[in-house]
Length: 328
Image (cartoon, rainbow, N blue to C red; front, side, top):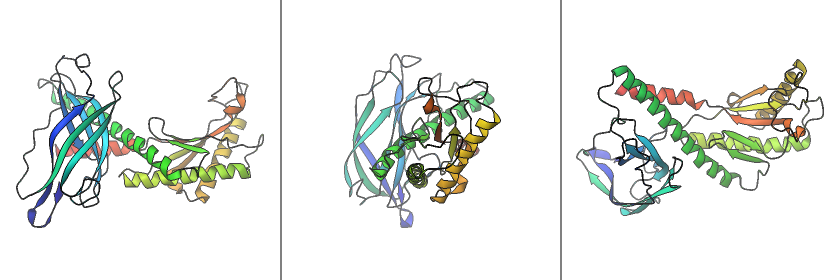
């Protein structure tokens, strides 16, 4: 809904909803009888449609249970613009919504088709009452609050993962063939994967020309991640630069030599990323020595540098939940 001058509102009306590929939820339901409903919300810390440019909105398909928390079946992101915007159209048309299923064993996706029409209104819009997550009424206030917080945390994490999936796709298009040495994998993996090894001479922490070229690509990817984070209304993600050494002797994997060498190498990579334009406050570095090997058959693969995204969005989730509960 878009506000206009004089108390008028541009209202987006959806009509004649059709569903396709909706899975059979009989076995999925705890009670054998579920009610499906759609929920529209804004991303975790973003804002809804407030102007002609519009925004990304989060849609969910949920199953309402009477005696247990509602279950998330599928979800998707859509971009909405105001009347006259080139994504929605001038005044009316049709929309196709493609949801990714999140429950194993169900369909891969659910499709919804509907007609839309922008209307101008000065009256309030009657909204259906929100479901209370299917929680039994005889539970104590404390237990209900605990269940609600658990539900909100899960929902917020799912929203972040959905945004990460969208960001992965966007970054692949933005980087194209310019960064063949890196792969941005935020969705589920929370990492920027290096496809070509950053090599160091034995016992040293000096970056070669080839390694600097790889780090230039990593820096470009991180900066694009930060731009898209702000575009989607989430805090820029912190990247942890993590160094690992190759040590075959289990007794020496956590020795001061290996821990120090891995930390020095991670710090060199971090400093180079800073010199390439990545803001210092969004970078951390740490060394793990040889304590986390990834291959027994290829020991040389254990000497590596990783660029993992920290889950600093947990703080944003907690802040959003506290604000929502304060209004309830």
